[in-house]
Length: 208
Image 1 (cartoon, rainbow, N blue to C red):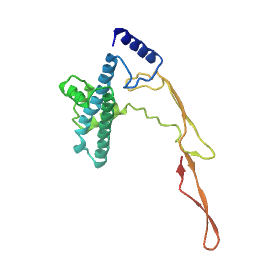
Image 2: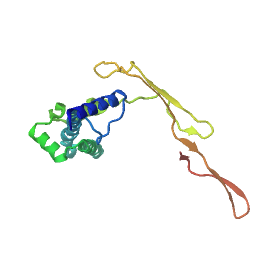
Image 3: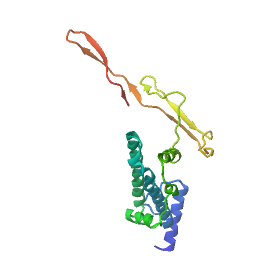
Image 4: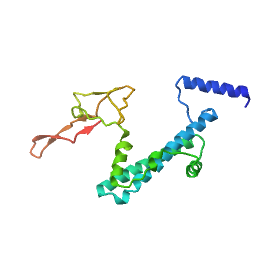
């Protein structure tokens, strides 16, 4: 490929980025851009896999069967995240064996927080609070309910700078979305008894 052709491809790529177009793995992209994506995705994948180790260390020592099952589910979840990310990186032209070799050789990095040992069961709680608890849990003022078929109910969720992380940093974005739960339909059916009497029964409630 000539230098002129390469320049045209780069310009076309920059235009797509400027237009906020989605770049697919098989699309042409600058080699540095492809390598950067591979590095970032693989680092995330490595962090998911290595992140299993501190919690997995306590699976056999969990204080109850319920906590053991919960911890197993969490560790399995992390493994699934890692496999998804490895698969995503593979679409960019790197093999899983190569990514594994980079991790074992130290060429590839992962989140260093997972190097801290989990010496007590309380450490597992701290991981759940400070690491896994990154998701925002919002408790509504009134319980959410399913909509009746004849009276649909919608809810609006708005987030602004009134939300802050545990360090006190305020949320800088904005979120405004309307949603509704599934509609409940109460089905009734008439049955005729052996004496000719008509009975009205309610079938189990279904949602759509």
